[in-house]
Length: 330
Ligand code: KPL
Image (cartoon, protein in one colour):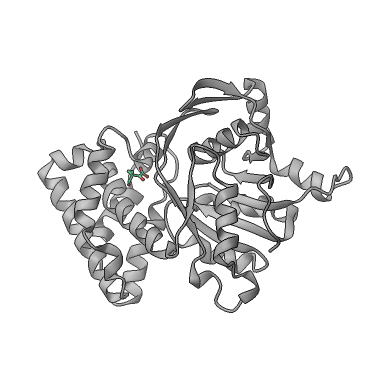
């Protein structure tokens, strides 16, 4: 991979809360970034709205964030009216369950060796992306930035967090030419850091992702089961016991995988996250309330499948998986 300039044009796949937050701060910093909307109808609706309503640290304003739909991007790269513009750096912020479809929709516009950065909850997608796009250099990231959508083209930056990025070892088993040294990873992190969003390199991104998965799996599905805000899980003794049972199973699984060091003090941390985000509805509860598919198969489902493959039944997680899968919204 050639060095990444500060002026690197990022395409952002997924115009949800996190994707539009990144696009908004990039725009304000004068960095080139294009939000890729789901389809031409969504793009037309956005263009009619006249911009993205953003509630950022600097105040509320409507920003004309550059956006395109997959058809346009493909035409620009390969079609009759081609400008030769391809996607060389792609920040993927879609929900886990939509990643492959969204990526496939822009596949023919990808540069020969694109840089892909996966920033999403859940696990299990990176391996599939790397398999389908072996020519890509894949990095993964995890964020604690708080953001939510207020409407279709409206985002609120609710709380400042930190974003860690790195290259999972598993993503580069034999493809040494895709291995990025620390300096290159730092450059990518820098190029994605549009103030106040700060991206740092982690030398153990797998541990970061695993811990985030553990926290998500002990909060998000429970907020669906009890239909409550994050903090209310701590006030309800039955839910609090559920949380402890889920965490215990994840710790057992981590021990089997030799990852016990990654989940030290997990229960106090899960409680702390629930307390810090007490008034929030988890992203999974928001999906259920809006009638959207959830990330459950990439969070609890991923853990249960992994446990099963090692002969460990995650009883409490499996029961919760069924509850969320069969939950009927509203
Ligand atoms: O990350 C979260 C989410 O809502 O997705 C929280 C609730 C903060 C932790 O699970």
